[in-house]
Length: 211
Image (cartoon, rainbow, N blue to C red; front, top):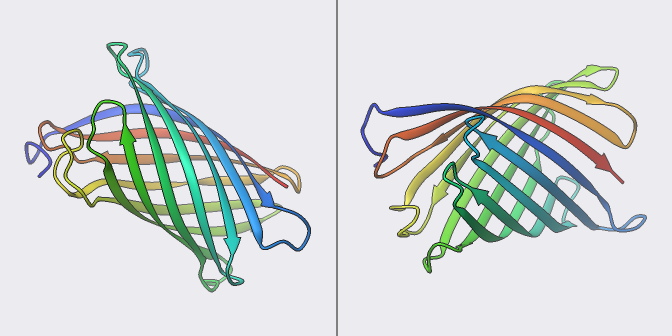
C-alpha cells in the first residue's frame, strides 16, 4: 500500500492556528474548546485548507476527559477545485503521571468523515502522544507523534490501513495567564495508494486563549 515503494513527494507549507478552551462555569466538570486553522502547502500553488472545530468535554477524573466534537473543512487544490468535509468525532484525553518534571498527554480520537466528492463515508482512528518539558518563566519545549488509521475502504481515500503519521516538536511561551503562543515544526507523512506518498514539512504557529 502507498504507491511506489520509494517514491515520496516533499513539500513545504505552514499551519496557522487560533484556539480557545475553558470550563463552562466555576467548578464545572463541563468544558469547551474550539480552534480554527488556515493550512497552506506548496507556496504559490494556491493549495489551501481551512477548518473550524468546536467541541464539548466532560471531566471524568483528574486525568481523563471525554470529548464530542465537529469539524468543518474547506479545501482548495492548486487547480482551484474546491471540496468540503464534515467530521463528527469522539475523543478521550488522558494526562499521564509526570515524567520527571515534564508531562505526557495521550489522545485517542474516532472520526466519521463525510466528504462532498463521494458518498463513501470514512472512519479514522487517531492516537497522539505529546511530551512537554517546562523550562521556567512560562517557557516550555514539546515533542510528539500522531498516527492515523483508516478503518474503512473508500473510493476517495483508498484501502483501510495506516494513512498518516505526524511527528512534531517546538517551543511554547505563556504570554499572560490567559494567552499562550507556540511555534514548531511538523512533518506530515501521508500514505497514498495510487501515487507517491507525501512528506509535508510544515511551520506551525498557534495562539491559544484559555478562559
